[in-house]
Image (tube, one colour):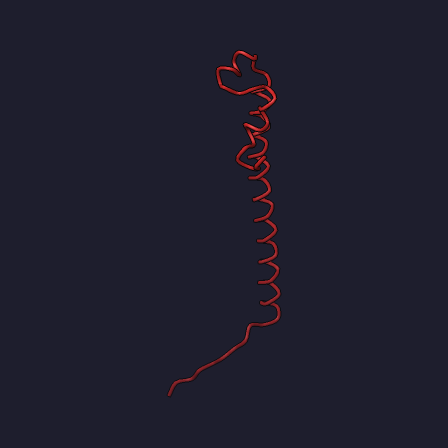
Length: 79
């Protein structure tokens, strides 16, 4: 003869699981924000580096001074 025991998750287990899911979601969003911020900071640093170059150096790169920001961010928007 076999015996089968069915038990539903307790309210405490359900609450703990929900709390852990919420904490995990929050940490994931913080991590995503840090990655996005890092990427944007690299682009801003590149803009500053290009702005520091002379007109001759920019001409060698085939970038006009007024197009620096567009050149760095052109993959993020269409203008």
